[in-house]
Image 1 (cartoon, rainbow over the protein chains, first blue to last red):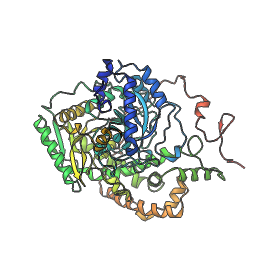
Image 2 (cartoon, rainbow over the protein chains, first blue to last red):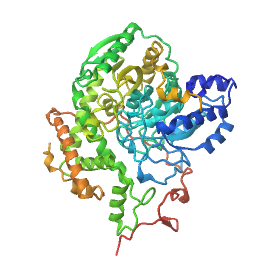
Image 3 (tube, helix red, strand yellow):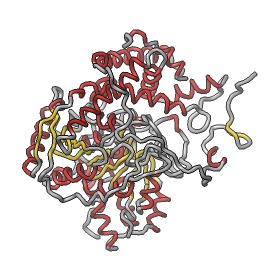
Image 4 (cartoon, rainbow over the protein chains, first blue to last red):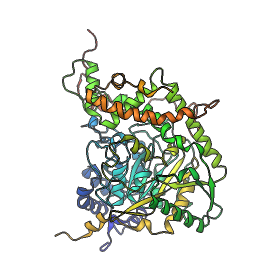
Length: 494
Length: 96
């Protein structure tokens, strides 16, 4: 395929070339590894690559499978047998996964090659990937800015054509927000739609695995492979999995989209607001009916989230004790000293902060005031959405109130960072699905920075939001734009 | 809801098995008091008669067959242990 820039292809286009035997999986992998070699020094998206296994899998892959021979990048919080799984934390230093997560088994079953692990905020706690203890990941549109987070490595890799597609995890927006800030597509499926067996747990009632891709169709293709029931995850839903590509291309007539008035708050960057307003007009012109709706409990979502997420994290992260895997402190004087110093030395500041907060809100005398009350307000948020979903098929909002921010701009103030998740958090609290799709650019300091449009759907209604997102995407050129790091990589080597 | 001054980071860190330096405890104390002040807004919500939320799609009584299946061998389970002996994890002595 002389003249084709292979790494720039979508999964759908790649799959079609592979199944027609016009290219081989080995050529695809070689081209991708060359691209990673060219751009990832400046980007910092990957924490590890398993080239030897990937080569072997490419030689033996069946290109007639739905994702046959297609390399997929994996957020480094999901276990891939034989590869490290660092969670971007020092505490998992030296760990190698002794098993495949269910999502990895399913990807392999569809012929995909999980060849490399991408950077993240430590244990997925953050919105900028600055909390990685291992590496800085840059936004490919402006290397002085964050890629978003926590799945920042996955989103940056896909945006820079250093991955055809990636798997992320989303606890409060960690797939959708970096997808928005890097100008790619990110889908958070319904809670329980994709098995989490083998995903290192952060907040068990919120975590969900999903795809980060160049196009909406690619997200649907990955969902076809990874969705479904798993007896090893008791929260996974035993519901039939539709063909998520089937609804793509259907027009939007008869579809009602809600515009929550609480989501057009002060603090939204005016360029983001303009882009969303233009997208709403566009969706309307494509046939969707736009309906003003209200979600009165919206202002409480961030507070509820940071009580529930930290409470669950404090319990989940108790397993890191220096005994069974990962880092352990030297010469402990007793077992409490082993736990205390291993954890203090192994966890970064944000993880430590959240464990302390979570322990506090669950502790005797405070449980009712914080945790129980937060769970009740969570129910009020759920009722808001249930009421609105009687009137509309999906909701529209910005994915993030701002475009990519500079390194350090929010890192000093944890609360400011938490407020970056204001539009994405509710979907996790109530378990519904959501997608971010590129909808324009903000101009800042002479850089074009992507803006994401979020669509939130009813439980198990992924097909509907994929349909709306696809229709919108195909009526615009936003998804075809490529970041400057890409053009730099295109220059002939001297 | 409790006042934010109730938070004693050094004490809670001990509960969470985290050995903090005094400097770390001081920084976290300030930052977490800010977060607790922010979440105080939940105090103003009327939650009378509201049940605590579970999940979007409630699932109950999740069982699977209690049947043997292939799983980790002891060797695999120990493959990442920092210290091991005789097929067991090694921990510091916990009894006198």
